Amino acid sequence: MLSILIPIYNRDCTKLVTDLHKEGEAAAFEFELICLDDCSSDEFQLVNRQLKTLPNVIYTELEENTGRSRIRNKLAEKAKYDTLLFIDCDMAVSSGQFLQKYIAAVDGPGAIVGGLAYDPVVPDNFEHRLRWTYGHERESISVKQRQKHPYASFMTGTFAIDKESFNSIKFDESIQRYGHEDTLFGKELFSRGIKVIHIDNPLLHRGLEPKADFIAKTEQAVETLAELVKAGKLKDEVKLYRVYQLLKRFYLHNLIAIRFRKRKDAWLGNLHSTKPDLKYFDMYRLGYLCTLMQK
Image 1 (tube, rainbow, N blue to C red):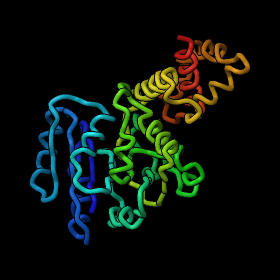
Image 2: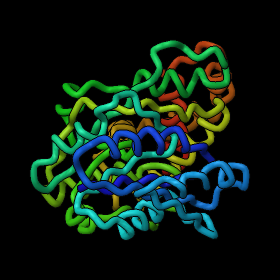
Image 3: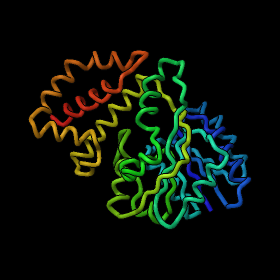
Image 4: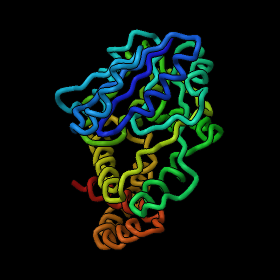
């Protein structure tokens, strides 16, 4: 028995939901598919409302935007089964056995992470090159690699968890900006001794934002990290902050902040190019964090 939970925001989810529904209908287990729309624009709500006609599918629209953490908690509250499968709305199913693999991997309490994959072909649209490059090099990680650091490799794009374990943690609704709700959730899984299993069952990530949007979301994620660090909620769990700490130990963090202000435009120039280099992406994030930690 499986509750499939999809938070929706400004995305046509009809293909994703119908593919999941088709497999669920063909499988020999009970399931429900709950979709919560987080106050998307009218054009997307109009398209996604057709999901209401599918049996075992619940589609609901929220009257105001609640954010990435709160909507996931709301989905869990609505679920009637003990196994929760969270799936982001910008994913695509690449296997007819996707749900079956998650069901087969369930072995008592704990979280199961299936992983993410990206189209191996470089996108023709230059606007999507940076997001694809980052996803292809940093997020599309093999099971073997993820298992080396199971908690640090936890991702919210697609994961299953028993309801009791989820309710003992929940997503931190105090996070107002984009980013690190998955990092914080992974930290709580570790601190509570809840096991995390990684399996080879990826979904294809289709949400390739234009470069300017991705850079803006990246800045928000760094701002969220700085806030969580100052609040004492995150520390050594994040590699970017560990590098900052190392720089601070040798009194180099202020120099990096100065370099960020001088080189920011040049680094952004590379990231906006047709061949973005992730070393400049990393330098940009680190420099921005150094400036934020000065405040």
